[in-house]
Amino acid sequence: MTTPDMMEALQALAADRGMSTEILLEAVANGLESAYKKMPDSSPDAYVVIDETFNIQVIAQEIDEEGTVLQEWDDTPENFGRIAAQTARQVLGQRIREVERDMKYEEYAGREGDIVTGIIQQNDSRYTLLDLGRVEALLPQSEQVPYERPEPNTRLKAYIVEVRKTPKGPQIVVSRTHPGLIRELFKLEVPEISEGIVELKACAREPGHRTKIAVWSNDSNIDPVGACVGARGARVRQVVNELRGEKIDIVPFSDDQNDFVAKALSPAKVKEVRFHEVDGVAEVIVPDHQLSLAIGREGQNARLAARLTGWRIDIKSETQILDEEAAYAAEDWAEGEWVTDPETGEQTWVPADGSEAMTAGEWTEAAEEPQEQEEEIDSSVDELEAKNVGLDADIDANESVELEEVEEEAGDS
Image (cartoon, rainbow, N blue to C red; front, top):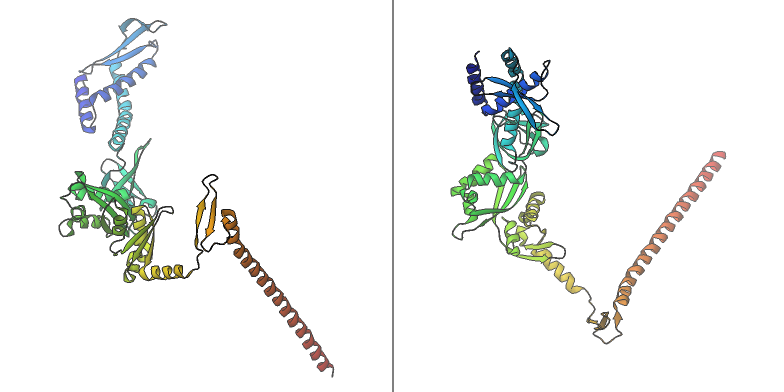
């Protein structure tokens, strides 16, 4: 093969592999430089130049201690073309594999959070392999939806959670359980989300069973829930089909926490929401016939609503609330007020009936006395019961001995 033919072959190879000719020329030049330096009488300081017609020159250098080039000369050995051909064959294969690995990694590096479509190649209990075209993605068992077993050679969408660089090429780890999959699927189906008009504010998911999302519109003329549902449910149906029938609840997001918590428990109808901010609890009151619907199957609706809103949700029926209020009203409560000394800051309880005032410490001791007395009574009762058990055991033992003696006397007679 003539040198022009070699250059054409190199250009064709570069075009076929999707890389630049300069990368391959650099690989050949580095290989030739290594081959030259292994030859006898070679210069330790030399580099290889390959021009556009694939003419090869070895340029030797004389360099002083400070690194200054004193002179250069052409030191290309005879029959170096044969060495060049052998070296090119060895070096190019390895360099092409390295470049292709780097190109594949660069294609997916930084794409964590994107959605990809692949064809299922291998499926077992440990992992599933997805063919993405030039690379394969790994779907571990921990990232698979329970009981979801797609058939081989079927298409599947997955969410990229990690891209690793390995000696064998990029390893792409994908997920079917990540909440981000829901976000990206809706972004594909709902143009308003991809355009930024509608935002998906929160997402709570139990993979394979149910998902709740909260959506918000930046345009008052666009209904965020309607945009996600689509005409006759066409848009949300596409997402449900991709998730193999997983149910999706779409609720409007609200800055009013009272309204947001009530909507998050849909399809149940909420009568009232009471917030206990110190404990981070939202107490939700629903009609009696809505209690089981608000809690959901095995508490699923309440769990998802809690994750969606960030509140611990305590759901009670109207009857439960009335019973609690009645029990609260029936309790005997001390009447009076706490008075704070402006100088010392000490609090004093002043009874309404005019009896002696009590400090906070005395109030605490008085409240603990009944509890201590109750504990002493319980302890005494336990001791009496233990003694009774011991007496019963002694009586049973005595009766057994007497019965044996009677039986022996009857036998003797």
